[in-house]
Image (cartoon, rainbow, N blue to C red; front, side):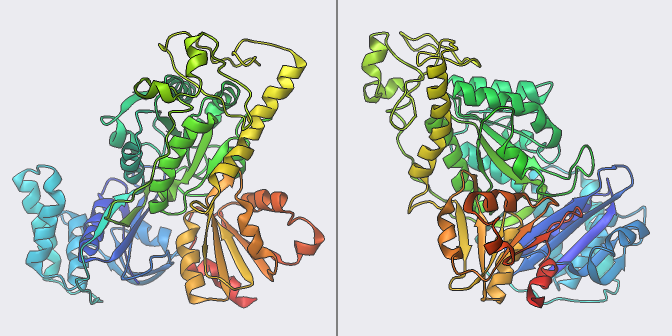
Length: 547
């Protein structure tokens, strides 16, 4: 696998340099992953963009083949983290753009003809009109390095054309819209901020003064029958937690996207960790349990966003989608063919004027006897929305009767509490079937297991392919947990949990639910826990080969 890094102070267009090379390799048919690591102290501090490219499997590694450094800080910051083979210091010249000089150097190292490099540069900037003098300065900067020596070269070739190359937030926006998203609300917060520019003009969008207003407006849109979601990170999600309790009580299926970053407090907000897993599963006061999912690949997000918007309509229960900084702000090659999902009809449970006769409670509605919170065998009630005739619209935070009016009757309280909890049992029964698994498995017939989440999947996938004595189980549905994978653990010799947090959060959830806390399992369980700001590298799994 080839890895090239560009590292300079913030504001020097380091990401642009990396993306020009990344998009070129992607155009040739290489699988490309671009990881940007940047300090939250903005002015003058270090930004680094690393481009990984391979013909087959992508993974994150500490090894960097070619490292372009604008200043000594770039070397100082990154040498302790990465194994850098070749460092090229970019000279400063006011007549040239230093980032484009490094792009020229990278193209030369890849044996890309000068004319082809310039053509790609123009193609890359075709989305906006550059002043002629700026474009010419870019071209001159690329040409500059072709007349100088480069310490290393790499052979690349044209493979095929068929990859898209997108950043995570763009993928989330595009596929949310394709899944029918109608309303989005947010307040800017890293790493969720860029989603605003991707969605603001495509769906009804509101940016509010704080995350409390963000969450409540999203629930208002859901109450009005719209497919809606909101997005935040870190402390913004803490402000949303009261709305999650309300969504549970009022049975409004709002979708909350929580893109994790470094904790606690304002700690390292531009780096990645998986600190919010337990928080998401218990994300409010009171005895409430939201549905929590964690997509394990960019492609998997396409299927999951369709599902979570559908789940919001059917189960009328708060849903939290966990992402992280690495998902939101990295770039990745994707299959270009359209991924399709078969939708299930919601007309029996959700009143649609175009299919009103299919609505299960149509007669009750016509007779003004409609019960919004009707107790049913599967604990799911039919619902409608404002402006539909013959119903009073109530979404109460107070305990309520089947018709929605406040009550303190102990028997009703007991039944309604059971209703809200047992919907998760209905969810698991309905959704965990032969067409959908809340986890992915790679390899089989092994007795040693890695259990992990999202970004770790890239590295762990590569590891188990090279070490077939290991299985990989990547969890997608965290709450409720799809426990069917436990059938494979019966003869396990070792189970290793790989997480980007200190407090073994995924391990806690799984161990408590499938009984791994007993002495019988204690000697079989190991872990890799990383919490140094950086994502999981393939080198972090070396300890697995030592046992």
